[in-house]
Length: 569
Image (cartoon, rainbow, N blue to C red; front, side):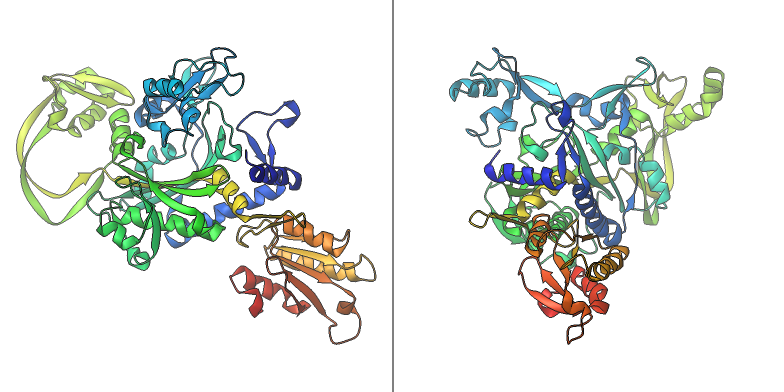
């Protein structure tokens, strides 16, 4: 950890942003608790995200379970593909994530095979950082936490490694809620769990973490976005996987040159930039890097990472992926449920086709009460699903193999009003904890000479908006200050009353936690004279001070929170 990161983490603990979890028992790597100020800052980030996706885009929100049955992750591919490569020291048995051991020698080492990593250990003389021992063989390690649903080992479950699957398994419910229309945007925020091998980067790599994920279901043949024209001339700093070189271009150019695959993906890449800069991420330390082909997740057709420059180096904090039809196709296959969208034609078409038809007379005696559901499953199948005269359907989670006595493939001529397609998914997935830490690090400013720290937090995320001080806690100054505090706090702007210590020390305390403005009640406020009924307001970043009327305080704070410049009030 760099000195800058260590100093920031110390400040976060001292001032109540974050605490190491279970510290009294020695702590657990990769786990942190949010303190009082951290909770407010985290919630402010979530609300800014909601403001864009619920407010501007009109997406809907759900809250799904964190424990999922095994079937969900078999369908999603996480059981087979969600692994990191692990190596153990042959001497002290300490575990390490294998690709991280060679990252100072190789760019993108996470694309290397186990054999290539083992060869790199030898080539670069990589040893155990704990004891200097030799590193052992490289193996796969699945990152999901396993559990059981119900007593004993009744049903295997897993803690979700992402919030996304809760949206996908609810697609049919959400599709009906949206009156069977696309596009359909759904968002969810909550906890996810990954059993990281050796987390060593503070809040950047955690075992229990918070996500803000958006799943946008779109027509696979219509990847356009109505508001694209509003942002098409805005710029993005991009690293395409074709050149691996940083280039700046407009959003429109990125699509027209084929750098970003489609307008929907490009729109939400730029939307991510809008959100992050609003939260206080320095645009000069923000870029978007496209995953290399052998780096793509098992579900991704394309993916761009929003990376920010931190003391740890360039770090991913948001991934914007085109997941194609992977998720809905897989869940339809494993559950037997229809996860399509009916795309209506402008004019009905007459077509000839092969269809799978159920032989209902044969199904009744064999399946009895299930016959209707089996028939529906048969007739939702496609002719290509028939293999060697057999058809497998899934009904109520049960796999049923059928032969020619139960179905037939017939050639028909039909007039159809539309076609059923599997929606594609565009997913902006935000790592809330990583964004939280990045906002803090980009705001952190320590003057070594003065030994003075300021967090230049954007007002939208600052946990305390206004500090309110009486010059002295007597002579009625404290009463006036407390009334101002109450008026601000009740208007949903977090305020903090502080009457102890010198004014300079109180300013320093507020600067250190990122409070944008401080109000001081002094003797001029209560004594006769031209400044009676006025207070001093101080701006954190410019250190400028102005006198304003007490009656105007709430209105001025509202204006400042809406983006007005301090110099104009």
